[in-house]
Image (cartoon, rainbow, N blue to C red; front, side, top):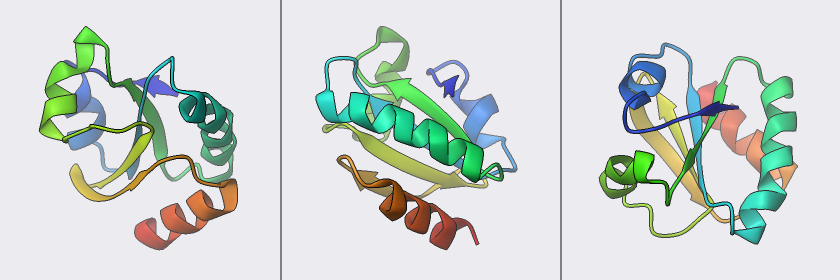
Length: 106
């Protein structure tokens, strides 16, 4: 999954024609670590969506954390045509995430 930072967000998310899911995470968050391999599996199953991640406590992502009001991780934000369309907070099951992503991007 692509690493999103303050510097590449515009190019990789806002200017992307594909739906983009950004996983705001931290390395010390247990639910985040559980969710990461699930998202990698889903990325293979839904190739029409670009999957990416943003370390919410990294100094490279402070603008994004503030801009999107990230106060809890994991937070999954789904963008369509560069605009936030929906978000989910907390770890979810693979089937819940697939349903959510497909419903929003259909």
